[in-house]
Image (tube, rainbow, N blue to C red; front, side, top):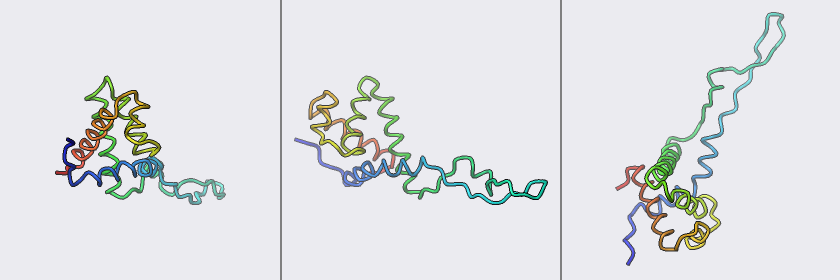
Length: 136
């Protein structure tokens, strides 16, 4: 008999499915605004209007940043807590939620593990993300 699903289950799964979009958005810096900067001879030499913005600045909604951090932290916790099979665990999450190319069973076959292991590992990962988000 499987464990009952928590109220956050579908919410966390939707966060995982949306993670590749958010990751791309977070990791893409804003385009710097270019303005005319006049040199000593009076000709424009170009440059950014705010050199501080050249240090990678992102314009990501706070909720997306929180979700991104939660998934990244869950990935790191998986690597730290399960060093022997972290690659297989993360492959399952990648194939099922990030790439959306496999079912749990198919991802388990690609990761060379059973369907029950694959299901248990993805459930643990969902609970880890929920824990990172401080969900009940």
